[in-house]
Image (tube, rainbow, N blue to C red; front, side):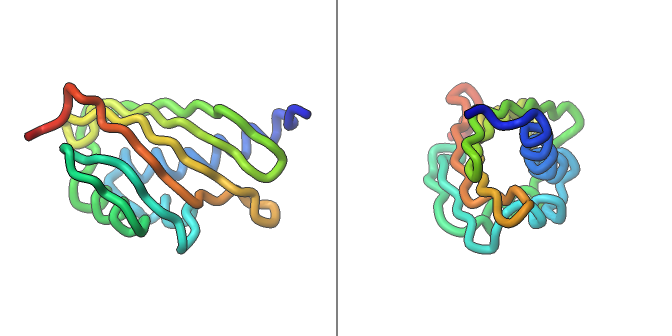
Length: 127
């Protein structure tokens, strides 16, 4: 059964915390989205990043998005208590394009992110 539009809005508002943190170079918003146990997986400039979401917070706080950063949120699926969100990012840190996948769970009445996996577009990899 398809979720109500209000649920899509709630998931989008949750994902917006992720985008706001990246855009402003300030992890404080994302810290309200991710659970303490959230994990991160992806390759940044060809090196595997994995483990605690703290690495994402560090990247956001130390790199900053840059003046020409753009992002788009796509809600791919909502199934009662689980949602999958894709965030397209362009020009993060002035050079990187990412595709992020966020896995969210509805805990109580709040959507929280438990995992982030990402791809860095190959034409933005710095060797």
